[in-house]
Length: 494
Image (cartoon, rainbow, N blue to C red):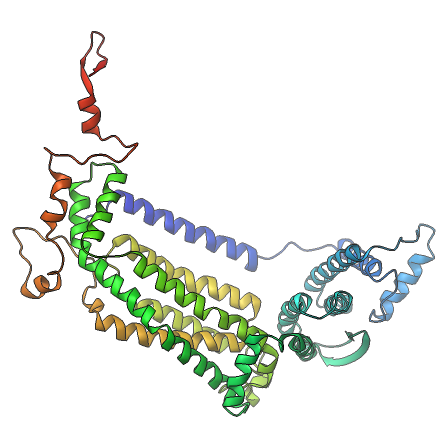
């Protein structure tokens, strides 16, 4: 049984500590209960938010405020301590309004069971709408994006809670009453509709719209089928890059016996010398490290823009359906999406499962360090993506795209890995020894590789040590440079 290097054990321990620290941070950040807020603190936060909003609106009382807020503001103006506010410049107004929206959000989260808490949560959305009017809607969707994140969270927190709210749409007040969760979804669709008018000029929106129309623009299948076609086109275009990446992995496994033997025989040499000899082994056996990194980078550059394509087209996905998404059953549970623009819990867990399966079918790398990194990524990637998607309430269209992409990638990886025989080496290869000659099949597999003794003999010959790299001094060179001990036991220089 192969012994584990102490350095490798330390690295594994360090990686586990990093995973533990990240898990603790995520738990404290997103899931730990927050300390309760006293009524006095809550009232002060609400008054501060209303004051900042008035400053941003040129000291005008918003028409979207509920009657109780208007009465409280009128009472404050008749108090003896009231001081007129100076009108702010536009950039200061924007800062004041943004600060007010954040204060409304915090108040709404901690007081969502009260009428003031509900009013504050929706008033934050009204402030974002006013900000979009103040800065103009052409070419910038920042405030729409901020409002969308809040409304996604409000859909779940306000599900089956009834009440009345005032929406501010393009400067007009629209009173609504009923299920607050459904009203949040309706308001979210209006936000996406406003953003869609900006996105229609983008090339990403036009490309995805072309595929939807190509498949008939039918809600039941066109939107999901358009995503499938895009994945097939992109994965076909990047298939040569995937083959190069796996060919490099095969080459790395082919020279791994030489690398292991060299590391064993040069364990007392400086690390710089070992690294240089490793690069020489790669060069002598025509193994290029860049041939594996560059294809992976190229595939990311090609596939990631689809993320923004789906985001720009998100409002149109409100018409899309996918099996249970958009069915009558989706109207009875907040965990099921009404359309492809909403978050769907079953599809979310299916996507996470596909991530785990995709990691499991990956061929094991020959390098033990790379094998440890692969195992760590198998744990970290689903965890990180899961937290981000759950907190951001990503739309079903995003998760459906990544699910289709994972399934296509799994099939391609399985085909290419079998072609290169990467599944036949479940454990890192060991260096051949003189007492155990390789079998005929193994001998044919490493035939293009130079023999280990030929590749590393100059590096381990004690009579002819390697010339150290510039700035590096080996123990032998240091000993040769020093003369016999002097009168006080100190070595002399030659």
